[in-house]
Length: 394
Image 1 (spheres, rainbow, N blue to C red):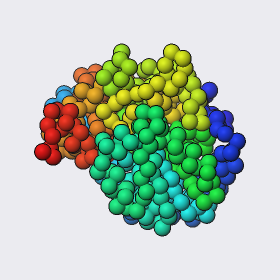
Image 2 (cartoon, one colour):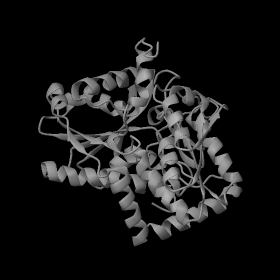
Image 3 (cartoon, rainbow, N blue to C red):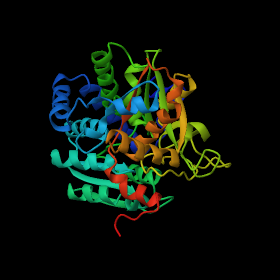
């Protein structure tokens, strides 16, 4: 990979007003990622505050019921704040503190990244502003309250589709205005260089632990690792330390919404085209004029119209597979894992569970797969109830 590029993807397609900020960030990251003191401090935060290493759980009932491979679940839902997002946020917040920044801003879709950012800001005594699409503030009202409870200001974004892509745009605009004291804590492996690399490095702890835990449990590598994909941070975290292990299949599960043959989808690899948006070259859902298209998913965390540049390259090279999972399949998986294993997954994570429900018979019984449960599903219960025709607040 050349600087900031993954094959043809990546780069820094940003206004001149942001160049100094990303150069400052890259220089600081390169300095601190090799600093023993920084790494020791981050490791202590991950272990003692976030609760790492996260559990690798053998889903015995699910394995027997599906009659396919031996299924393990990487339990990122057990992290402090309830998702994988804390891994990246603690790293970026600590980096921002070392850079002398006093204020964190972030975008959020499902709210989990916003909650994690607000949590780190509270811990490190920093101001915090979260941009969230107005539509998502309604879908994820619980997380809005959690962010405010933690001391963050939550700004509903009303422009565009009032979802994640618009929250990203507003956060970037705000960063342009407050570079001196503000760090933009980007939540996924997207945006201009160096963000895709920084977020990947902080999330790669997931695959590092999976590899160690699988050797301890089975004495071997898994045959496949499976994760949901929106922008792609939990998926690249799940994949990264297996990229050179060619025997391990890397399977990313995109949000197909109401189907990839409809306009109500967010399956970027399956339906998108090459483009430039939010500071990077990658694949994006676009209309016939090349404009970024409105996207849809039941999952607020996956309805982003693009995908991180490293994922785009993994697709181009054939190293990773990207499959589309519909709303209905994800909801069935949400209910299935809850009832069979007593684990309520985030609706995002349920897209990955749905894959093995569909394809278990494609694996032999002596094979082993790991599914990353990227977050817990408390935040989604009211929405799934509505999807099933119930109103739990009546």
